[in-house]
Length: 188
Image 1 (cartoon, rainbow, N blue to C red):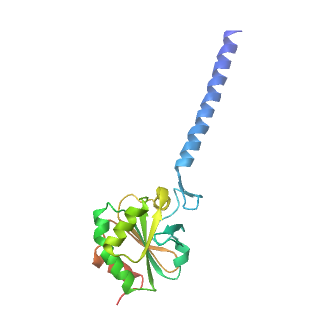
Image 2 (image 1 turned 90 degrees about the horizontal axis):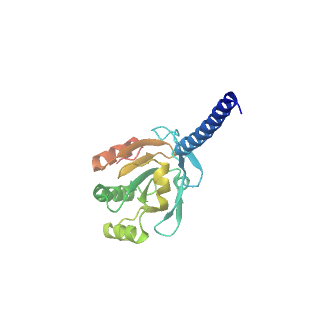
Image 3 (image 1 turned 120 degrees about the horizontal axis):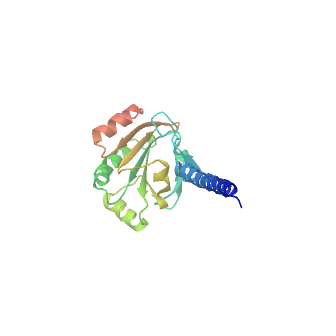
């Protein structure tokens, strides 16, 4: 075999290897750009989760044994509150959420979406604080991923039509909660 033919074969093998690695890298990059949705589909990382965009739908098991989806509360204002039992600010804002859920019963739904914790831990937390609004279990944190939650608590305020109207990261004070709800038409 001539030196020229060997060089050509090495070059061809290198090109094929490079193309294969490129395909693998591109596939991994594309997979990383997708976020698993609660229903098993993929939500592109570029999906708009900003104020004014539709809130992605999901369905989760409720602590009371049923299932609740965002579509089920359409027609009411919804607060999607992402929280965990170990989160001190989450604990602090729960009484305000409970109070507003009672005050605006029938017009406001609080969907408290717990971060992938055992049901018995969530139930003990809910019982201790006397919470009566919808507490949802998120096994595998699928909905947390869908909404790209990076810190607790995080609250999404969704209008009656299913559109995100505000996003609040961190502890919600009563005044802030009232302001967000007033912007959505819920005030005294």
